[in-house]
Structure formats: structure tokens, C-alpha cells
Image (cartoon, rainbow, N blue to C red; front, top):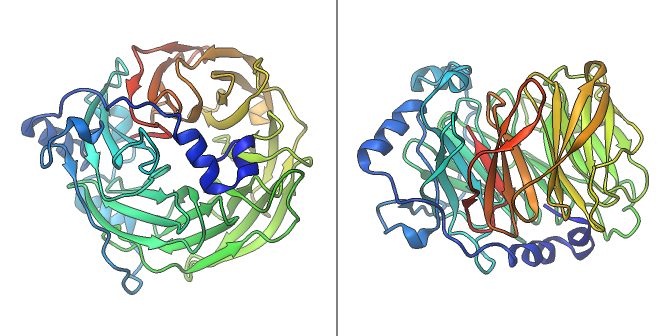
Length: 440
């Protein structure tokens, strides 16, 4: 995922530029014993967590996996029945859990000091402490991660010139297969809420793709790919750069944020064929470089991080048409001379929003007002790391995780649900070139 500097340089160059600055440190503590790992697996049909392969003897913490060749498209997955069979059908179970929770970590494997694959870790919901559990190998440059709604399968981009997406079964960390996106340097992916389709965004080629998900969680052959060939690239850009793709809360529209063309595209996804039809475009001011969009839980407003011009904007969303109206620029709270806002996270109750500021190395805190229609900047706190590439809240909203790319760490903060204040929860966790943290 790019920065203003990255965008100008194109996909691979921007990744290597920042990835090479990642920490050389290894993932945290010693690998868990078989009993502890079995207990965590039984907790949610998931395994525990990650550290660098240099700390984990082969067969103890690492799970090698070779991507099998592509096969014919599988039948679409039925998430409800699959979840019932696995015992993971209750979506509220993770919020009520008091034991260790899974945490998955994205990295780059092809840069100096990078990781060996997908990091696997566990966090304590009470203290926020992260414990390393191993690495899923066999996945190259897994810079962004997403999990299936039934909690049984993890998906990762492979951010390379020949872009791909990979499925990993969490019960035994088996790599189920890899599929080409048809584009270059995919940097974001998400699972459609129905659980039948995987959506991905290719930064390098400015395209978005759709893959079917079968009953096992594996991916089928790509059903669609759309290249953002209009409008023309924005000032200082060399072409389209799709940076994110997500489904709106109404479930009827898919939105793709393109940094290179200063545009948010809205699509209708055909749930039968897995094809995209564009229905609307929303344009930022020229040169804004939109990077990441996060919806308010009310579904009528969203918050846009503009990477290139260091601003944010409140967007009004119309569920019936999928149209997005982008508001005026607002401050990121950054005081550093150069800053690239990266990603928003909104609390489950919709009361507060947080923004990762790369360069300023802070987390901005906003009060969400007027039922989501207004953001009010409350201040910033140091992220306790260098270059926070991505942030995520725990499912209950009590913890915030920041993946700090250049320092190779994951910072954890306790969230005061009454005031939205962030307080550091212990020391940062060492994770090579940390670019994504996915708490479950």
C-alpha cells in the first residue's frame, strides 16, 4: 500500500523502499507447546500466533505450504452451514471470549529484514500483550490479510508484479491454494459479507478482481477484473492505483478507492456470476490521493484518508444508489513536515474514529458527531513506532493495534470507550516489516 512517495514511484519500488527500512527483529516469545496450541485451536477453530522463522525450528512453529496449481472454479461457499459445522456460527462469541485471541500479521518476504510468511500470534484481551506462535510459510509478500465471516479461512494478497491471492485454512494452517488477480502488486482484499466472493485491489495495475470461494474456503478461478481506465490519473500520478476494495454496510455495493485517479468507484456485484458493474464515481479534489475508506456503523457516512495531500474527508453515502459525496478536506492532526495518512478505524459504537499518520508517527483521535456526519479532531498520541502502515480494532473495540512498518513492531493501545482516549498497553511486539495486524 502506497504513500505519496510510493505512488509516484510505482508498485514494486514503493514497497521495497519502505520494506527495506523494516525492523530486522524476530517475532516475540517462544513457540507454544502442543497443549496450549490445541487449546487455542479449539477456542475458535483457529491457531495462535507469530514470530520470525529464525526463532522457530522447522516443524515446531512454521507451517510450510506449496500453492497448488489452479483448478476449475469451485461451487460457491455456503457460509452459514459451514460455520454451523465448525461450531463458529455465533458471531458474538469472539466479543465475549476472555481467553487468548488470534492475531495474524502481514509482512513483506522479499525485502531485507522481512518476514518468512504470515505471522501467527495471540493477544490477551485484558492486557493487550501479544505472544508469538509461529509463521505460515509458502505465502510470498502477504502485505494485507482478511478472514472469512465463518472464521475458518484466512486470505492474503501476494503483493508482487504477478499479483495473487492465497487462502489458508486456519485449523491446521494449510495453504489451500493461490490464484492470480490478473494485475500487479495487490495491496488490499476483503471478503464479501455473504462469504461467497473474495475482492482484491491491485495497486500497480489500478485494477480490482473477484474470485469465488468454495465450501472449503478455497478460491476458484477469477470471475471478473476491472481496470480503472477513467478518469485520467491525478496530478503527479503515473496511472491508476487501486488501493482498497470493500463492501458497503448495505451489502449491495462494492467501493474501490483509487489513489492514482483521485476517485472512489462504486460497483454492483452480481452475486450469481461474481461480476462487477460500475454505477457511480466520486472524485476528490485533484491531487488528494485517496487511500482508505472506513464506514460509520450507521451506514450513511464514511471517512476517507487522503494520502497525497495529508487530509481526511467525511463522505455521505446513499445506500439506494451507492453514490458517495466527498466532503471538504480536514486536518489529520499531523505536525511533521511530511505525513502520509494511512488508514481509518471506527469504534463499533460509532462514537470515535482513529487515523494512522505515517511520517508524523501518531494516531489521530476524532469524535464522531451528528450520527456520523461530522468528525471533530481531539488530538494525537505517539504510535510508539515508525511508519504506522495499518491499524485495526479488536472485535469488541477495546484494543487498537498499529502495524509499524519501519520499526518492525506492532503497538497495542487500550481504548477508553467513554472518552475514546488511547493508552499504550505494554511494549511493542517485534514483527519483521510489520504492515498488517488482523486481530480476531
